[in-house]
Image 1 (tube, rainbow, N blue to C red):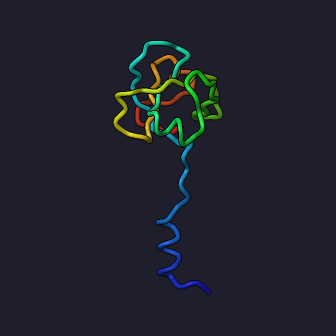
Image 2 (cartoon, one colour):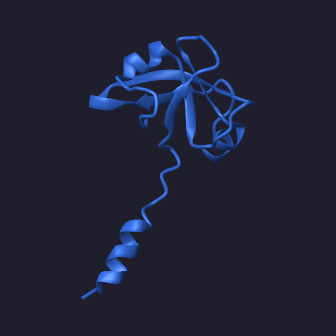
Image 3 (cartoon, rainbow, N blue to C red):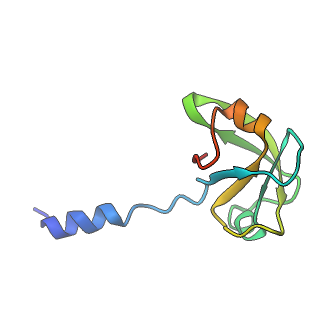
Length: 96
């Protein structure tokens, strides 16, 4: 049987989920575009103009075009405008 120390460290070392991103305000005002850093796009093997399926709360889904954001400060954030957030039923700071 595993000791309690091993169980505690296993919980803290959760799997990395590279496709889970935090929602932030978009720099563009296009209703079908999401933006993310160039490093994150490379990690997810996405190219500028690719279509992505975004999944939000309550099994809501929408398709958007991904563009790189040169001013991105964090690799774990995706920028989307208000219309896309409403379609997914998410708010700023939620995970998609």
